[in-house]
Length: 571
Image (cartoon, rainbow, N blue to C red; front, side, top):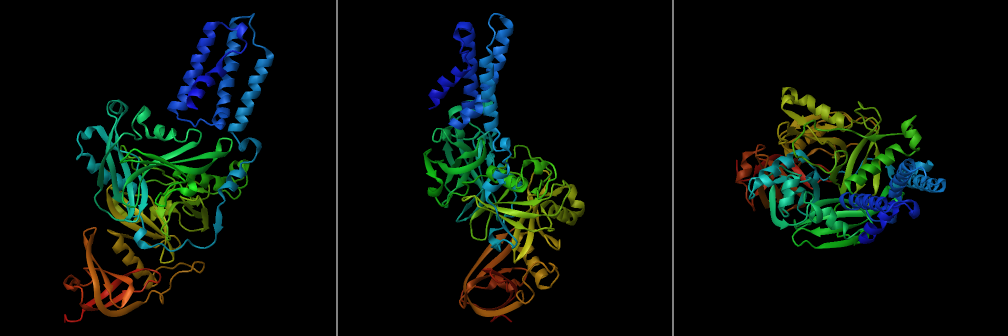
């Protein structure tokens, strides 16, 4: 197919009035056509579909009109015929009309309709607190950079684009180790590995040592997009981001699809999986895609869908003039520029939902650039493309949450900054989780929490301590959610007591603090968590001991926080 396009498309650049065009000029025209075709379909890597050909006809028609005029001006006896000019002008208009669909016929609202967003007045389901993303991508980048020094010839490499992937072992940021610079990429056609680090807790990054010959920074036929293009030449090739399967094996996942209206309204059709360890590529239709694959619908698609839904429900003109019912994704950023830092999207954020599935989150606000309140927020399923818009008029938006945490930083704002706010339904309260990072290198500093309704805000060194403070504030009634928001009340948050024999006890370290997880023989549906600071006796506890504990009973939560602890035989 591509050989046919490279040889035949340049023919359209020729002067079809052969008798009135010199041989040299025809050769020149064909060379121009070949160069144009090569740039568009090789360097730009456009799909080689009938749709792409029609979209490119406007440039070919414009070339014919301009060159026809030049030839006519240089040779008065060789005037371009009015019929040829008319034909090319009509072709130009048809291509413009097709390329700008559905805007060209006033059907922009069709783009909003194709998203099929469902609107909800209720909150999204309560999140499992274990799946809260607390590590921002800037911190992941900082941690991954430490791996570069361990590689042979570290000056060759950089961290590639960072994306989030969900596995049975948790959510991780993942990135390929890429070549830094085009000259180095010409001389080196192999990449040394893949870096990954937890998004749910602060820990060191790890390296998967595997050599592979296709990547984003590699050139020509070693470029990963060019490699995947061979397997879907006629489809629109979307992202090619790195993901990990449930066994932490790395794959490039290249989604592909088609346009519903001209060259707009992208729809996903399937994925191409490039197994990094073997270089093997497999093509899966959307409904056949392996369950571990997170992104069939990419971040770029989620951005477009959110803008279609928010801006175009009442048409394109209304989105510019009047703006009735228009709402847009909130603009926010950390305000720091880390050299070499690349991320999938700065508008939508990947999150793990309450059902364990993967979503893109973004909040919506009005068109004012200074607004700090939401009209609502969306969760877009990354495998099905299903979008739900949760209406939350008047609640604090992401930028407002960052501002609230900024106030808690005080003088430390000179060195620290907030980043990537994510809204969660925690204990049935719409709550912003806002990481705080170092402005110099992006390293993790603290974690902020802001309730979207009451703007109650706290700051802590760790997720464990942050959630403990939040639970106590809820139990004490210090968070006023208003009459329109249903929230777990003090009765549901009362302190409970239980005695039992320790079935299992495990100690882990989270942000430098010793945390113990306990399973009792008579309460197998709950896991009890205790910080050593609650009672130092916990370090003496072992399996088989009988203990008395007090805990804040959070309905629907598997992990319960211990507020009082005693081993029976210790007085």
